[in-house]
Image (cartoon, protein in one colour):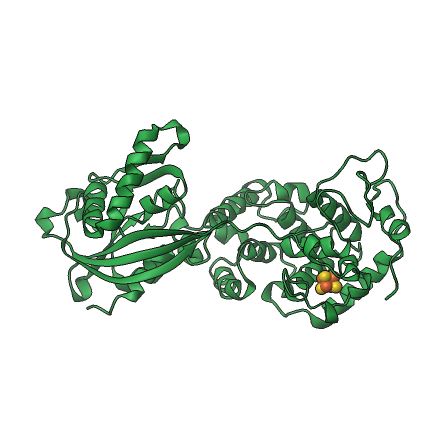
Length: 446
Ligand code: SF4
């Protein structure tokens, strides 16, 4: 392998005042683009330059794998084929379509941004990168991906995969020891010291080939996703191995951008399937999570899940429907200035609830809904993961009391914060994934 002349070849790349293109950059572009055009995976969003479709795919791909996204992407575009249909969408239908992808704020931001584009940009996706980035839920990465892929702008789009590739190619360490130098100011005299993230973006800007910015964006991400993986990268078949400083040094670890993992927390909770009626009249009680909660706005089985999640977050407010059907807020922990004693007593109660789950379930239904179910039976246990929380959820079944004993607001089939749902229509509802799992774990009932 030809050794790289670090000082001569790469440092000019980092000097923003220097317009010369180092010879390695065209070679790097040729190698990577050639590989991408031969080997890239055929993904649905790569068959289009429509900014709407590319935007939907980019938002879905945040925190979510390609394999998971593909069916969601196809369903979403078939139901909302353009900006105007998304702008006019009903939030409940939108969340139902998103159900299972998680991070529901992304779906709400999509709709909010679509409305802005319809109202302020005449329904045409803006081409100006600054205008794209000003839309809700769109940061520098997504704006760069849309602008380069759909409008041919020579802008970088650095996601986690692309960042790792650039950090390894140029051996960028934290904070500024790059390119084999110990200089505190490797970006030229007079330049201020840059963080590693800023250095990566600076290099990425310089690498974009003006004649093929979209393919370049995809190629960097493709390399990071398929060969230049966080662990066990396939350097042996990498198209840019000869130019890769980390590979040349034989030590990838300092450049792999591995973030310390957040320790997983196990959260115990209960969900209750409260049923009334049989056959075609069968209904299941659902409650709506408060908009300010994790997974806010989704329907969920009643129980202790919301409280347990809030407590595990170290303190926050939870919203639940009260016996009159209005949303009430209860605070847990010390955030927002609430008394520490209150947070402590709720935590103590959650610990007690774990020892006496039946009582906990009855208390939760009584305090949040004013409902005293009959025939409470513990059934299955399901497991589910939300961010770094491992949920262990006991599933209970219960019969609703006689109609005269059900609190008046809950007698209606649907209120602001509750719903007696037809079990055969659950697929069309934005139902939390934990509740979906709980329901499917139960034996079929008629
Ligand atoms: Fe990544 Fe290895 Fe290729 Fe370097 S040689 S870019 S570390 S896969």
